Image (cartoon, rainbow, N blue to C red; front, side, top):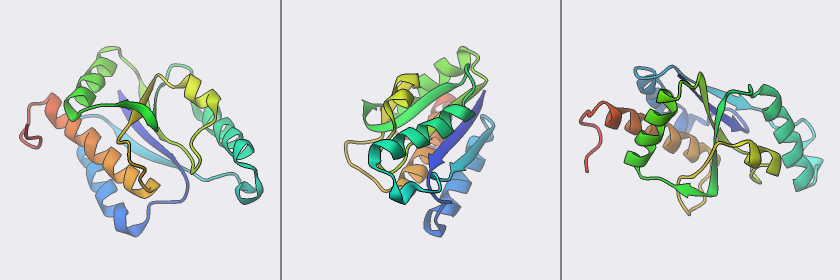
Length: 157
């Protein structure tokens, strides 16, 4: 199972880049892991919110494969503990998914077509975070879930 982290927006800012790369490297000891930063549509600044979300969804849907497991990060999703996330990862691995995509949508969220396509909608918190911090938190939490699966000492309860 390959883990892919997709995010709409600009490349990692220097203040989080090192941490994201570190946790992604650590995750790769358990599952192949990589990032795909999807640039917003060229005319994003001039589009109404609904049109922007639709354009972003078309880009993402064009890159998804039909058998990909899509986990959408959204503040209205289900909150999981670190242990619950590890259980979800194990279930996905047991189901023999080739790719699991964690998607961080655009600044206004995602179009309903993406929300409907998602296999899971996960909320990191009821708080709203900048996208760059969400990337770092996501990478750390997936790494933590991997260590829980292996009963390693990183996670303390």
